[in-house]
Image 1 (tube, helix red, strand yellow):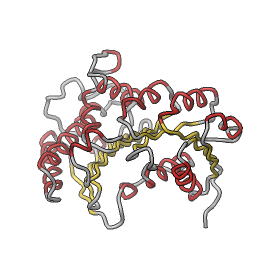
Image 2 (cartoon, one colour; image 1 turned 120 degrees about the vertical axis):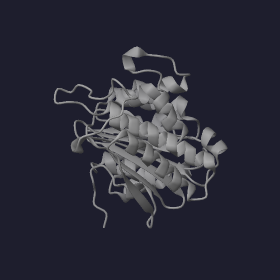
Image 3 (cartoon, helix red, strand yellow; image 1 turned 120 degrees about the horizontal axis):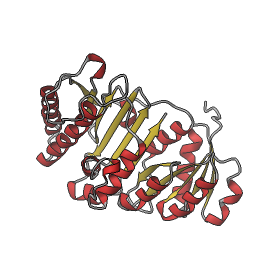
Image 4 (spheres, helix red, strand yellow; image 1 turned 180 degrees about the vertical axis):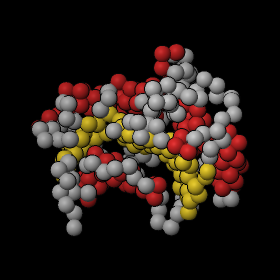
Length: 312
């Protein structure tokens, strides 16, 4: 039985079949949905809307609508590289989601639409199983010291290699794991006054306290590879993600007021098909990276990628 959840989505999509598929996914969680093909039809449907969804082709229109309606949130999808979509996330604080799709005739991934829809409807942080098919296998790694970090990176590379994937994929996921662990171990920990404890020297050997340790999981279902790192501080800001990635995609221009060239975010972007950032202020920051195993590295470089940010 599907219960009505009180969420109403307006879906602006010029491809009727794609619009119907996305609407059906919203309906499946108990939301209501209205599908339109022309921006001129949107105004009449927005009175009770909570979410406006569209391709980045209509990003200017979506941004205009959500800025003028405090209740409304935006969700975009795209078949193009992320850079064009990222502008809307940087400039509009109520657009926090871009979903990649294979081409303009294809809908976004069904599980990804459902995850965002359920979060809009009030669901909490999903478990790692939400990113994978039933029957997946996972490994949890213990990380307390700098040496543990290096051991975890090596173990993650070995885990990927065991799937008979190209060596470069294992190296790429090792680089991603190292970047996420550096953020969780050196940048995230703060003292009782909110001052960074270890960020001053990212080359120093450290030993984290029990309540400072990140959790690290790597998992696969044979079609997707997922890496998840969670710290117990919840200090990551929206601008760290979107502004940092925007700088990285623009060539790494330095911006001292917002934390460097965005090179760390570029590692995340270049190593994954989708990135999910989930922050509960003062409690946790959880970063999940997903890589599609049936995609070759050339396709990875050119595919439309997903980016999500939740904050509470």
